[in-house]
Image (cartoon, rainbow, N blue to C red; front, top):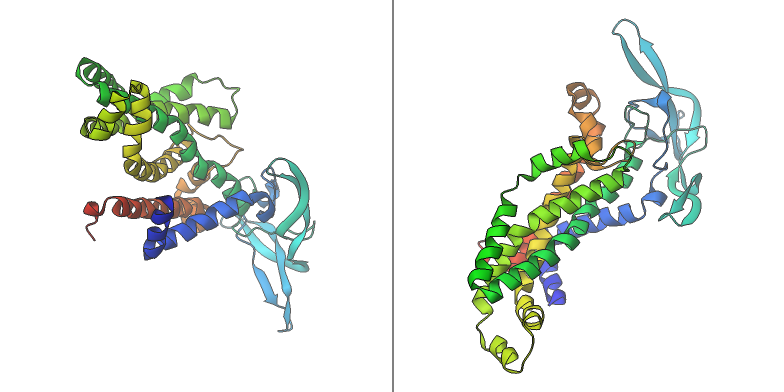
Length: 355
């Protein structure tokens, strides 16, 4: 079935574009250490809010040259009381490909020094400028995207098994068991998760790392969010539990749990696939929103949410538009996942296709 779904996805023009975009994003994130010019710990405080580096291929004599760039020189404009940057044309810094740069561990395991693109040790190559701490925005986009783009899948590993099993048991047994279980699920659904997260942010130990902190919040979000999914599964189980294949399984003495897991829950596969695809964007937005509010990933660790927080100032939006790049990537990723999810829904349930 998965192979057929993928074929149908590839036939749809918008879904095909979304698959390619997401494929490129995840490819870049997987090889982030190699692609990024700098490591995630790099910082040059003298280069705060530097504009994107200008790369030249025509030299001062009008001849074709190897790609090169100039460092920025920092000056203070006393008349307007602000720092300005201008190109220091006294020395060229050639752009290097597959050259040695800052040491890192690929995937945290393999020591390496080679980067896809870099420059000489005295040069600075900021493809998307820098932030207030002089950190390369392009490199941080790659490292921050690893958290923002994978956190949704981690949450699904908690949410979906609980929701599937809970909804399956509730729908299969019915009666008082179903009534009690659904009332509990409705009580869980009534918990305001946003305010719960704010409370948690104030009581979590200050010594927790950003990853530990956010993983705990994601688990709590999943434990709150499973209830709505379980209600839908329960309704689907009610519609199939009296069909002949279920009665045949009962007649041969199969256990109730075995019937639920092996015969009934597989009937919800189509819904589960669509729900998983459409749930990932909501977790990407949740991570971004929480980090933006200071409840998720904490500095100096990067995520698209806390990177976007710096762009909320009006001055930065007007004069430093490169700081808005994380927001653009969030928009692209969420749109791509929604396009794929809608197409999968149309493929698995043609009655829903209104195009």
